[in-house]
Length: 322
Image (cartoon, rainbow, N blue to C red):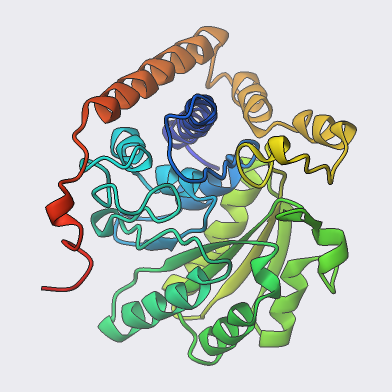
């Protein structure tokens, strides 16, 4: 059974991710964030339940929808906002933007704007961990659309035959851009593809943070003891469109009723009720956590707004190894 301290940290992290994404949505609508923004509102249980199993030295790769993954691994919201604003104080000095945040010191070896591109990178990271003889693991976050890319099949096959310490976590939010997973996948569950590569595959309720934690915990233990990779599919839902502002293009590929039905499965109040029933969290604690998080986010935005833009003369700095 998980201890109270860890459960509270997981709850606080879910609230942080929700507040971060809501603020990004607000700022993007005001034209303060350049480029694109892909939000993970509604998916908070997956990165939090996953990263609660990891040590700082463990690695993750993420996707174009990676804010939640990166925050769950320990990123600081102020440097993330600075990156989204294109400021020099951002994680990638303002050159990466929303889709390419990385911080090697936290084991965040990169989000990625190309669908499926993080899967072979994670596999290579796990190979390095194995070759170095560490007990560290790499978690690869990817979506249901990436499960249909060739990179998925090639990387998982290699990870299996080399028994690499990697956990493939599919955040199945039901849509690849506007294509429903029910149409594009040849199987009902992405996890069933694990059998083709002789690795364990399991599907869990991605809106249940404890279910995610337990499934990933087993996979991490397996990877650390040298038994190789696992595939964990977390079925969840993104509340917003593929990218912020897509409504202006008139994209309609899902009904309001469908979205509202999934919002009833909101992972945060579900976890709150669980913790309240266990006596770990009170109504006062909930209000206090949300107020403190709101202030933390406002402070992070202020930091980012006041940060300097990159010097044009430094355009190539950091792009190549010294």
